[in-house]
Length: 110
Image (cartoon, rainbow, N blue to C red):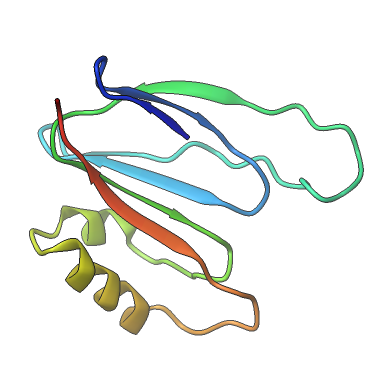
């Protein structure tokens, strides 16, 4: 993911077991690029790079497959500080045998 703050857009390439959700509050829409699996398979991969616009105060989450996130949009719509939202996500998601990594953030305009 690379963010271009001056254009309010970002470029995202789906790689491996990482999921990405972006919530734009003004139109109540959730962006979810489909992931490309098989990163460690040893085969040559074709990566899908896509460009998206974001709005001021858009929120996002990137997470590994160790997090079983149900209802991503409802978490991203919440009007609570990011650290409190992260705690709610951890409490509501079942623990798996896989490692879990997630990044939760918001995008502001310059």
